[in-house]
Amino acid sequence: MLELNAGPAASDLIKDGTEATFMQDVVEASQEVPVIVDFWAPWCGPCKTLGPALEAAVTKAKGAVKMVKIDVDQAQQIAAQLRIQSIPTVYAFWQGQPVDGFQGALPSSEIDAFVERVVEAGGGASADGGLEDAVLAAEEMLAEGASSDAAQTFAAILEEDPSHAGAYGGLIRAHVALGALDEAEAVLNGAPLEISTSPELEAARAQLELARQAEDAGPVAELSGQVAAEPDNHQARFDLAQAMHANGDAEGAVNELLELFRRDRDWNDQAAKTQLFTIFDALKPSDPVVLNGRRKLTSMIFA
Image 1 (cartoon, rainbow, N blue to C red):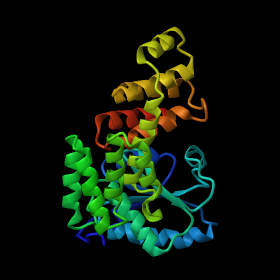
Image 2: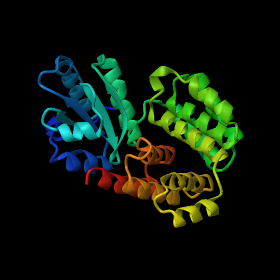
Image 3: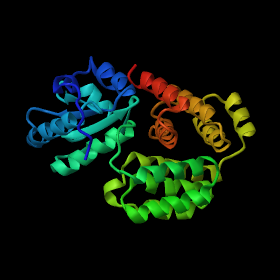
Image 4: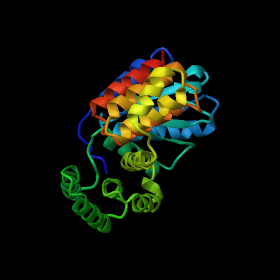
């Protein structure tokens, strides 16, 4: 259960949004607290069920998350940019970008679980109780390079709580750090369905994907020369970004991908944007590379 401490009034947490206020109400507001966006329409039957249930769950979170309701008939440009194909569709934004979401009406228990995941993605209170100390200890091991010890600790936590998203994500990342990519993928594929889209598993999935890419990355110097000689060679720039990330230069990789997106955002089915999200997901939300990269990408998208 979420901690129910005193918080702001519902009117401060839930508002109707428009295309004109989207940047302020969602993108900018989500730099401080996660924002759940409910895309709905007056003629949508399931929306009338989902909306009040979602508002109730957001209210119970007492300020740990906010909610903006967007009528897609009145905000068609935003709906198109976010590829809203059916309603109700719900996205959770954190630090300017979608981090979770779902389509269709859900039972109240799943709505509560969704809101709690969003709260945790924004650094709010977790529901994992005493196991959090063990997770923090394992994360410290992983940060210090004791990947094998971290993997054992994460595995022990999963014996106590087989659906602990943090431990699952940590175990996958520990295997990635050990170079055991096939084992990491097996753990990822075996994760319970209810946590398969959690921020912790998305981060681990992103790190695994980047590690796979690193195996085939080309030489940075050669690709840099090619891009310098052929600035409009989008594939070369994309390959350069992958190579830079494989060599530990996440900031350089993000800059090249942003430049590629600026030159041709639709190239190769928006590959630059997809790769940027993968890098952002793999890093901590507070990482300066993520904060600066998301801010620049958002400016380009909504310019």
